[in-house]
Picture 1 (cartoon, rainbow, N blue to C red):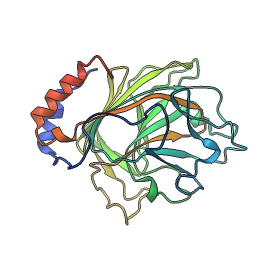
Picture 2: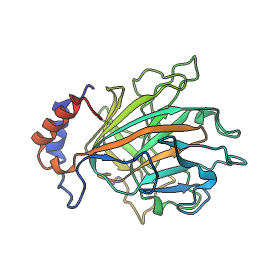
Picture 3: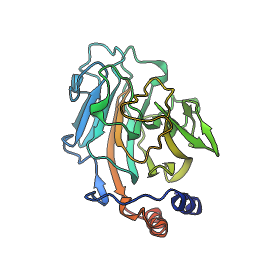
Picture 4: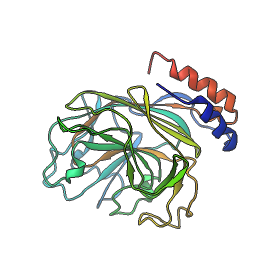
Length: 279
């Protein structure tokens, strides 16, 4: 994993954050391999926690997104939200796409899913809202022949600073390789509050951006929840349902919040995480 520690140190010095009381620290198994009791489900067109067609389920120890009980797709985009909010962390996931896309799914949604970072709460999504205000670490699978990176960034209701400039385009590709077929892929997201975010694929940093913020001109903007250009310092983590079956065998997180008041401690912990042999 290639992490630019100097940049992290400088940004944390500029955008330091206070430690939250009562937060769990260290490694947290977001997905416990048994059930989804610690998660909320929100599917477009349905109320909170109506898990239409048993979309999100646990099978053989894996969190799966499936459509075998659907009669039609009808753009029923869905998300499953971990119930705890986080600010600074290293998120680690292992995923693979399986089977065939449900009939009616959009072409762009073929082998397409994602992890929503700094997301709005599930309970605040409108009944027909497609996607939460968030930063999407987009997960893509190859089609067997064409180049198609994973660990990309999409920005529903948000903007970021990319290469020193305000980035307003909805999606940007990472520098990752293409992963064809049903192979397992390991992706990570290093999220440091409202300062810097890194997307990591198979231990290589493939995308870096900073200052995630609300886009007041986006159709998802809700003035009762956010202010235009508000920096996103925390939020929820959600996994997507976008019409192609996917499995997650690992969804875990190292909570960095207690280190955030001291950039040197963060730098030390990141080096330790970089050299870890487990997780």
